[in-house]
Image (tube, rainbow, N blue to C red; front, side):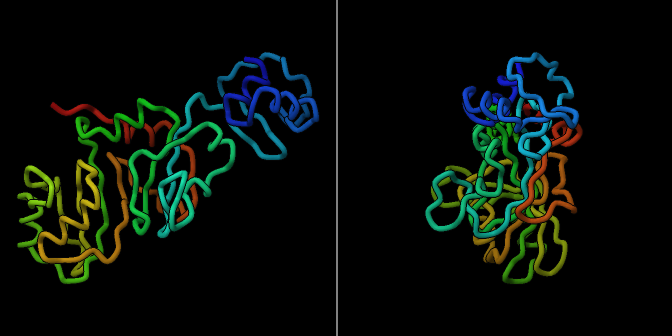
Length: 237
């Protein structure tokens, strides 16, 4: 693929802008400036530097972000900053989108991608992708609440009871709740249905992928092959 097209595909602007970046010596390959935009390169394991920042060619973007509180999962936020403000401009140019959303006060694992099929599969209830939330509650937890969450609670405007896949008491006020759906304010509504209240909410796992302990709030990274496999859904009957 021509160098100009590589930069364009990776979100560095229009082909005209990418051509200008190259011709003005803003692009380096293997430590040397490359100023001819039409050189062909094999994109397998291809890396390059734009204005001093290193990039790896990726046909599709798959990201994990540790969402802080008071950020909105929207390109047009209303009350708080957008989580997209935490990403570099080339990823925004590529059109990465959230795989599902987290409420503005919810923290933890957020996946993003520019792969529409990937987003659909992880978001669709047909694939029943489990998601684990760490719930901090106002009132002490007990086994009766857990049993009710596992059996199913009736939520307003829902035709049938909604049940958790798993519910594990971690401490008196901390519950790990596993869901396969993503209904509006679902965790908060489910805890309210068992006469408790959510004080803090954090998503800590999607599929078999845990939120990395070394990924600080507000930081993001690329999903490697193992991480991507851990969130690749298998459709349930």
